Length: 424
Image (tube, helix red, strand yellow):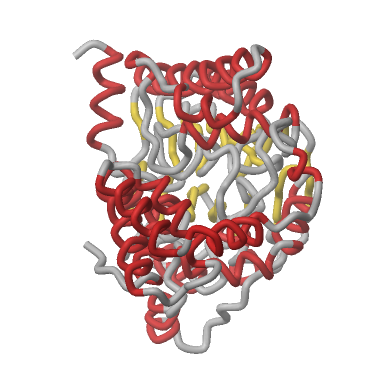
């Protein structure tokens, strides 16, 4: 296989959204035996061994930290010289307090406090909607608690001891480590670079799935992730010429040529979608048309198990020109579209609207069927024909590509269940 075929093979064979289901290593998994070990979870924690201790990279959620600490302690119980988090998301910082001991220094990029504050500001909406995508029964937390009785599972909101702006060089027991500021899922990302081993530990810098299109805006709710700093980060990592790229989930990518080809394709895929979006709206094309029409050419194919091209088009549009689509006066006012649709339904009757919705679904237009169904739900939410229509339309979307993206899959499954349908 040539190098581009190797990238295609990696996309096709490396797991996609399945990796978003936490798998816990026990014992810790050697990435480089005697040097780097992984403890899998929502996002993997890593332990780097030094001559006289260890460095912990990312600490999981608070409830996961007892597991990570137990499997790492079985190999090297300390001392923990440093804790480094590669971004401020809760599944990276949650176990800092458990791992920290007298003499431990917690290091993060300078934007870490601001990024932690962002997460805290929207904690309420995140908690209300988390069940759409995540196990809220606490299955893993209960098991970890039983396996580690008496160990704190409290979620940390840690304050770094050292914040760095662009670059920080460390030598720990003779091991050289460089921390490089980066922008990815957050603006406080950092790359942990081991120059003597040519290993770049990036965790979720390019997203939790690799090589997949980045999620420039999550449907669960996040600040927009601006593309140009992400592209600059991509180029910076490529300039390192790593021989091993350690991500937040699954096995590392090995081989400088393969890593370069993967990152180059990601860079060019994002650039392509970004530039075609700019061309489209500058030419007067509406966002919905651009979402339908902009697709990656075969030579730029990447996975779409986390971010989606069509969603990126909409995000790029809104990053540049905002939420006003310049199509309707009512966009400017706190107008209730369902109220207007209810007025129309009062004239046409729900049966006629259901006839049209069912015909749309029969013709394969599940989105139109759902749009009509949402209007009907405003006046007759318990109608049995409506419930059957909505369940079937969401199932149609799931069965026709909607199961690839972790986020789309979770939403569609939740809606199928809400409308009384059967899940596959």
